Length: 50
Image (cartoon, one colour):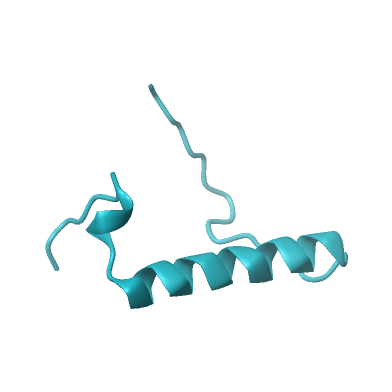
C-alpha cells in the first residue's frame, strides 16, 4: 500500500471522510459516557515534532 497524506479534505474520498468523522464521533461519545477507553497503541510512545 502506498503512503497517503492527509493535508487537505481533497486528499480523502467522501466515503473515507465520512468514516473518519463517524469514528471520531464514536470515540468521543464513548469517552464522555465513561465507556471503553480507546487505546490503539498500548505501551507505545508517540512523538510529534512540528
